Every structure is written in C-alpha cells, then in structure tokens.
Image (tube, one colour):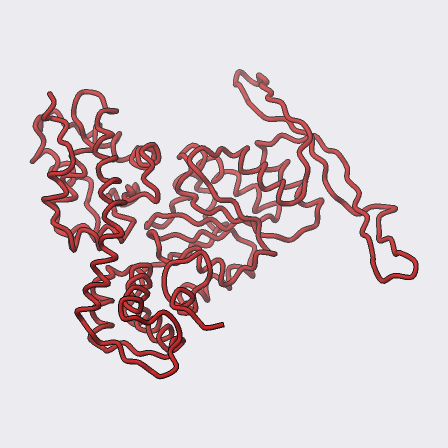
Length: 430
C-alpha cells in the first residue's frame, strides 16, 4: 500500500513516521520507565506528550484513563479497577464521624481474579486447545482509599503502568487528592504516568511536598530549530521529496516552537503541492507562494476555535461579582500585548497594571480580584468548554502563560483589533 502524507506528517492519534527521539526527552523517559517513580510529562498543547508515551509504552503495558472535568477520584479508581478486570459488584455511600470530622467514603464489593489452589488449565482430549480457569474472590474496599485500590490491584499480579491523560482537566480539588494518593501508590509499588498541559516545574509538588524524590518530571519543551529540521528531513525522506532551505526556514519561523504546527504545515504544504503520498521520482518543493497558501489554510482552520474560545472566556465576565468583567479585560490585554512579550508570559503585577490602564473602573480592581481570577482560570475555561485550555497561571512564578501555541500562530496572521472588535464589550450594556 502506498505511503500517504498523513502517515508521515500531521497531528494524529497514531504515531507519524516523522517522529524523532530527543536525548533530553526520550532518553529520560525510557530511563524513568525502568525506575520505580511516578512520571510527570508536561508541556504546552500539541508538543508531543502523548506521542512520547505511545512511542515507548505499548498498550499491553498500560492502563489508560482519559481525564475529564467531571471526574473525581472514585470515577478514576473505578475505571482503573475495571481495566484490571476487577469486577465491581455493589456500591454504597457511607459517612462516618471520627474525632469530630466527617469522613465520606464509597464502599464497594469487588471480585478480584487470582490464582490459588485448584486453579490451572483444562486441556481438551485430542486437541491442543487449552482453557484457562480463573477464580475470583470478593473483597470489600473503599473506592476512595489509595491503599485499598493498591491492595486489590496487587492481587491480580499484573504489572502495568497507569496513565492519566489530560490531568489538567481535573479540578484543583481532585488534582490535590491524587497528588496525596500518589505517595501511597508509590510506596505500594504501583506507578502512574501523568500527562498535563502546563509549563512550570513542580506542579504536583505544590499540592503535596512529599512527592519530592518520588516523581520524575519530564518537560517536552523546548523544541529547538535543529529538532524541527530533523523532523522535516525524516518526513520528506519517507515521501521521497525535498523541501528547499527557504521553505524549511519559513516553516520553523512561523511555528512558535510548536511541533504540532510544524507537523500540520508540512502536511498541508505537501497536499497544496499535490503530493499526497510517496513519489516515484524525487521532487523538490520550493514554491513559497504555495507554502504561504498552506499557512493561510492552517490559520483559517484555527480561526473558528480560537475566536470562539476567546469570546467564551470574555463572556464569563457575567459570572463575576462587582461588575468588574475581569475575564473580558484579560482577553483584551492579551490581544493588545506584543506576541514576543506573550511568549514569555505576563507577570502578575504587570497584568494587574495593564488591566487597570484599560479598565472602566480602574481604582476598583484590587489584588484580591486578580487572585480570584487567575487561580480560577482553569475552572473558568473548563466551564466554558475551552478545550484544550488557552491560558494557565503559573503560581510558582506568578505569571500568566499561553499554553496553546497555536494561539500565537493564529494571532500572528490575524488582525487582533478586528478580533477585539468582534468580542462583545460587557460595559456597553451598563
């Protein structure tokens, strides 16, 4: 079957053939897999977190959980147990009072597969077929206790790593609970790989300082120009084509350090150049006009998503008291800030000053209002269905960051004033 462009370039749930290994990322990840610590893989959207996991961890060796905003720890642990083939029979909520505090738990009866006396294989006479006999035993556990979950998993004797994808979608409360449970799981010998969209180190340590020396953190950023060059070269070699040096420079220039953008532009450039698969004769693609056309197509593909996301965040202003409309003003400041400054993130105090400079009630914007806004930014984006999130507040460095680099790409080739004019100004309705 002829090799297609989509198999070589682009953002896909399957591994693309232009994937390259980087020593500071892939080598560290493979080394961590051989250890006994939890692994935290983090970075901006579309920077290769899932691809890294798929490259080095087979499906047979993992239990995969796709986290969502509505998930709590009980939901996550129930899914983990089901994938370990542990059957949940009954459940009931239970609340007990102990030392003046209310401790809620979810009691369940589970059936755990195990090999004991009398277990084994049944052979059929005159046939090579073998039927394996699996026995189960029932155990009562609390679905919200990591110790209970770990103990029943150990009974199955299955050595699998638990992967939590999209960890950033979980509420802060659930992330905090899991951060504390991770210590228990690590002591029991059950390992997790956590993938999340954020850019600062020690994200989980903020929730639980005891995780120090119990986790390995692997940032997938930054991507360097030489990495992108290797990706492009590997891909075009697969397709028996070549990109001119000018084309490669332009692709890397507009990518804003995002491998997803590089992959998508390479794919679209091939398609726009009428290359849909591996060519019989080596072709050199060097038409800059076609490349700019491909870039325009990708800008258009991001326009609807980003415009809707910015409008949704700005519209959340009505959820805030005192009529300050801070989500609208945070969008306004971002659209009026130079892209090069946005790439470094906006320091909290600077953001506060910028908002006061353009706010219709500047003296009423207090530091506490900024705290509520920035600390609740993740929840706000979840509520407004901004998936993946555009912004993240780095609590450690007190800096607002754009964590979806495709937004930089979109803003680079779009008139930001036109975008701002299209977003309703809530003060106009006062």
